[in-house]
Amino acid sequence: MAVIEQQNPIGRVATIKERPKGESLWVDAWRRLKRNRAAVMGGGIIIVAILMAIFAPVLAPKDYAQQILTNNNAAPAWVSQVFPNMIPRGETGGYVTTVPFADYPLGADNLGRDLWSRIIYGSRVSLSVAFVGPLVSIIVGLVVGMISGYAGGKIDNLLMRLVDLMYAFPTFLLIILMMAFFRTSFGNVEPGTLAYTLGQIDNAWGGMLFIFIGIGLTSWMQMARLVRGQVLSVRQKEYVEAAKSIGTTTPNVMWRHILPNILGPLIVAETLTIPTYISYEAFLSFIGLGVNPPTPSWGSMIAEGSRSISSYPSQAIFPAIALFLVMFAFNFLGDGLRDALDPRMRGAD
Image 1 (spheres, helix red, strand yellow):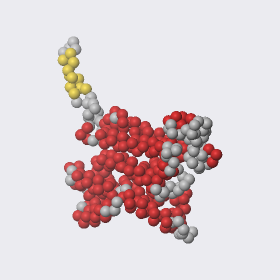
Image 2: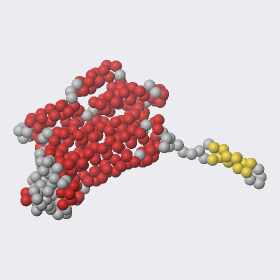
Image 3: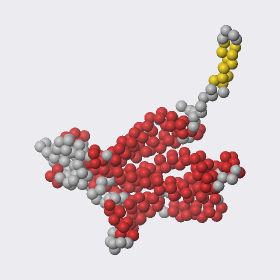
Image 4: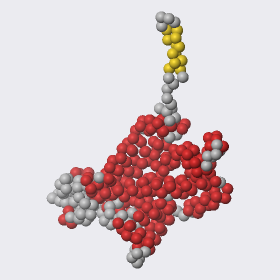
């Protein structure tokens, strides 16, 4: 508490000023995060994308699967101005059908489907992967890493050798092999079996179930190693020893004393890994192992647009811009969280 002397007619009187309340690490981190313009911009883009995915039926002017073949490869006038090689009909060498902006804000694909509506619905796929991937990674990686780091000895050695075995396979190749296996093995099966049920769920989700399984099986190894390293660095700290000395059970020590003190680096690491999960899904859809048509995915839209990119570049560039913005938004937010949660930056502006 601060003691302040004040002068009055009687004489000097000591008054006690209340000690200012301290800020927790999370409050201080939130304050510094708000001052990071790039992180705030990234968070804003992510919020807009989430709202766009939630309210897709309201925001999309057309159904993502609706085909109007007479308007295939059509585009509004402004698209032709942005891409000079897309010459409207009526001009010399013109081949692009011009449509009103209200009908097709970004134009139509080769089947006459509205690009803007498909981009809106495509955000659901990318954002689903962006949240399911980290969820599986945290659940599995956190459990494996904490048990390995806290128990040590043979248990630590066994679990880390399992992680090393999973790391021996290239992640992209492993996911591709898994997706190929799932798609071929669960395609023609007898009704009533587990494989048939999984196949029906995958079809109902537009082909996303096996993407979740493939990414989930390969996303937890890095988190497990990070958690193990963090646990090893804090398990001998004074507060952990004090908790043990008063008879706190091992699960309580792990989840109430160790976990809160290692959570910051885990959040930062997983936020920075989200663009990797999104790129996995986009690449799988690009090569035909992603969502099932006609479910829109930015990766599959880029693949379809790339086949006619010289004549209709907008069909590949617009979904690529959407993918670019979301991935960079998560990168900006992750960088901001890394700076905000750094204990060495506490109290700095």
